[in-house]
Length: 168
Length: 116
Image 1: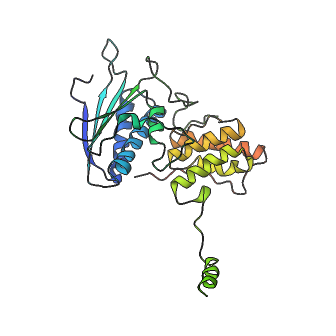
Image 2: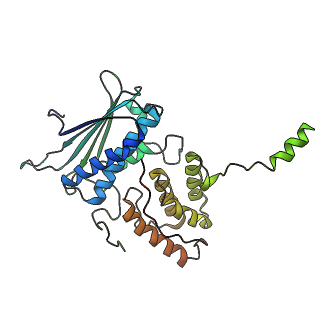
Image 3: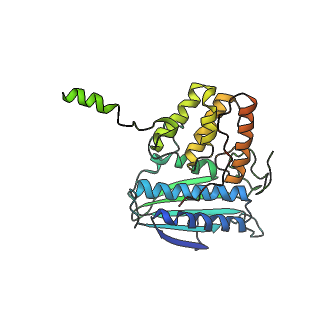
């Protein structure tokens, strides 16, 4: 359970023009928390997909609805060093049963894309829930590489090449 | 008369592109997925192009289809940043050329335009 105040909390409106800013913020903070470039890119992708899903499907592309992004470092080490990242994304969109937001079969292609599948594949823990008043909450955790439960995001070369290097 | 005009005009109206070039994202995803199910190696160049899509869903299905058709991923992952993906796309283009599957055009991999 998250009992502490978030270390970062932003509110944005559901206008796609702000997606790149949200991505860059999360990616930049992830890097400072110890994730490599590949992992930062995947975390940013998950946030991007989550925000796109809210804007397209939750708010039917209305550009003036609220979205909140909150971020905590996940401290699992006894020394208190950040060992991952916890993100929470809230909206005031119509509520759906969380079970309906499970990852779908990749052959079942419907409008709405593959966002939930991508989020679940890229992050280590993903949980949808209904907020108490209205809207939905997405909680995502990414463990730092080398910690229990951490995945490489299924990339073959995760943790390998760094930016600018040839991965050949 | 109306029927004749309708038939005559229908040849003049450009049809909406379907498949890989469709403006409809869902149609594009269906085309990418079907290319994988078909096992048709002639679709490999089209699938390689989709590896550079701005849509991560299209990239995910494209590498999945390529793996189905060829048995390879060549280290490509759809969620990697563009610079890592572009290295893998170069490997895919070289692979296609080596296997006689290269398209006539072999564009350089550009840095993608930033999404909003």
